[in-house]
Image (cartoon, rainbow, N blue to C red; front, side):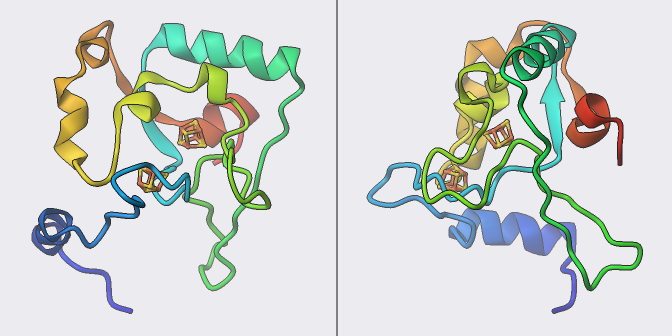
Length: 131
Ligand code: SF4
Ligand code: SF4
């Protein structure tokens, strides 16, 4: 499948192509769980402590057709489970608590997203030292 342009992506978002909710509720499908997330230093430290305390292991979802093999999905997403796939649910960053795919821009209404400086964070590299 060819990769579309940003414009096509934005149109798809407006058309609800990426709406995976069920009856308006998050279905916990994990489709939005990206390896790149906007995070504050405070959130990174909190997650670091959490994964150490509960010994949270890295999850892998490799794309075997890619060369080199890549994983663009959050290392905390456990796809072997039907529900409750986030292995750091209690400590997940604000973007994960605020985002819902049926209203992608809705997250911007949440005040907590404006607290602190958020940097685009490579989650796997940050917490498990790999790209
Ligand atoms: S918000 Fe994310 S996890 Fe929830 S239904 Fe949408 S894509 Fe799936
Ligand atoms: S931290 Fe949890 S909710 Fe957020 S992207 Fe990763 S798996 Fe998904």
